[in-house]
Amino acid sequence: MSWFTQTIFSTSVGRKVIMALTGLFLCTFLAVHLAGNFQLLHNDGGKAFNLYTVFMTSNPLIKTISYVNFAFILGHVVWGAYITYKNRQARPTGYAYNDPGKTSSFSSRWMGVLGTMILIFLIIHLKDFKMAYLGITHKLDLVTYTLDNGDQVEVKNMYDEVIEEFHEPVVVGIYVLSMIALGFHLYHGFQSAFQTLGLRHPKYTPVIKSAGFIFWGLIPLGFAIIPLIIFFCRN
Amino acid sequence: MSGHMNLTLKVWRQKDAKAAGKLETYEAKDVSPDMSFLEMIDVVNESLIKKGVEPIAFDHDCREGICGACSMYINGHAHGPKQGITTCQLHMRSFKDGETITIEPWRAKAFPIIKDLVVDRSAFDRIIQAGGYVSVNTGVTIDANAIAIPKEHADNAMDAATCIGCGACVAACKNASATLFLSAKVSQLALLPQGHPERAARVEAMIDQMELEGFGNCTNTEACSAECPKEIGQEHIARMNREFYAAKLSSSKTK
Ligand code: HEM
Ligand code: SF4
Ligand code: FES
Image 1 (spheres, rainbow over the protein chains, first blue to last red):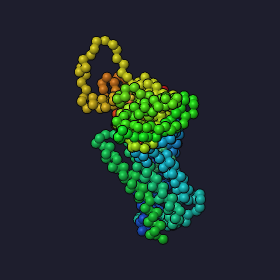
Image 2: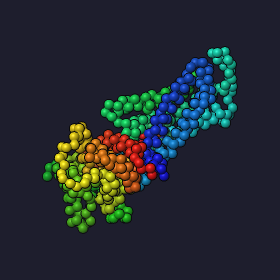
Image 3: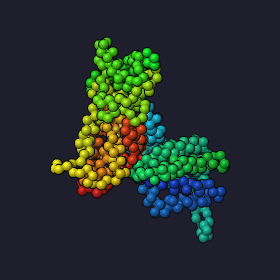
Image 4: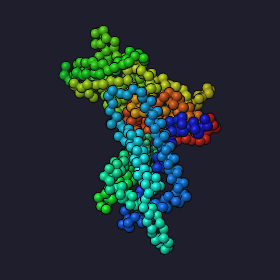
């Protein structure tokens, strides 16, 4: 094994670096993804959202980033599962009486379960939307828009698909629950990643912990509020 | 006697490393609130001996919070419910009359049980042997003040050096990780000029040894610092991680 593979597979700190770097990358991805989702709330019959969807799925740079993103999700899941498995092995017999609630946060103790909830959500989410967009599960309707420069374009009506999905109570319920899990995952995960990377300092750590609210609070809230607005206020 | 308490103890009894253990219930009668937890067990053991029952085996030595021997997981906490103390510094006034107290050994694959509450912590010794030292050639004694050390570094190194190797961090960690223990030594020696020559080799070797011993991976739950009798802080883990990255990226070890 080279020093690099030895580090990321066979040392605890090395494994954690993979978790931290992929985790932080996924955090930036969440921010970009949410900015895109807000296009759904334009009252324009879906034009902004549908054009944005085309941009996101055709621009070569964005496409490359999206492949990297899938690879990172996979890496995060595989390393997360490996770490969780190793940590179980490190304590084959548990305590008959344990009281961990006073010394560590709920989030920090349930990262694996919260992550698995997010993974299940991601699978459902990709099936519902990505596979529909790609025409695998069913064919989307087409719409024609006139661009600012006068050109006409014909694009898939992803907007209608989303609106339809977000009128299903079960879909909205799963979506909102998953965002709660994401919030808890990032309540521990975001600041934990900086600690893992050794970025701890009396001046900056309080700033990181406060900024974490954007990731564990505002971003999951933003994701959750869109289906709720569509479910209750759009038809 | 006024203020004395009667308690019910549930104690992990295990004949030897291979035997299956179980929790046994004992009554601790007429316990003075001024007794230390270990003195209370001494008294219970005397009554067990009188009854012809094998006394409870437990580790202890200094009984003043400096040796780190007295490993006991009491009511779900390493060294009991109070913070910043070892079991020998825990007093019975921290419990209520009539209370049931559950006492278990440290639980970790790397700390196998020898008997009852006694676990084998030699994994810690092997981690220290892997790199937790400075190599000094013998010769004349050097003036202690010949090397200038900033006060802040000296203080932080001293904080890290207070680790007594008790293993409470491992016991409390949901991952049975020894990261806080390692970080205390790595951090102490990284902060001092005497530690610098072996800096990179030290952190790599100690982390490899932790892996070999079967300790878990740190997930930053911070339970270790909360349970550490010397209140070793999380900043030492961050410093050890930095040491590790610097070592991995710059050392000439390519395997
Ligand atoms: C968009 C989705 C996700 C984001 C933004 C995210 C983010 C993070 C971050 C920032 C960390 C902290 C890394 C560290 O402590 O150094 C982390 C840890 C972790 N994640 Fe995720 N994660 C996501 C999805 C998942 C999924 C799908 C799983 C698993 C199936 C998962 C499982 C874990 C585990 C097991 C840990 C390690 C626990 C720990 O270090 O405390 N995560 N995640
Ligand atoms: S770091 Fe604290 S809890 Fe861990 S061995 Fe040292 S003194 Fe004990
Ligand atoms: S017996 Fe030495 S620390 Fe408790």
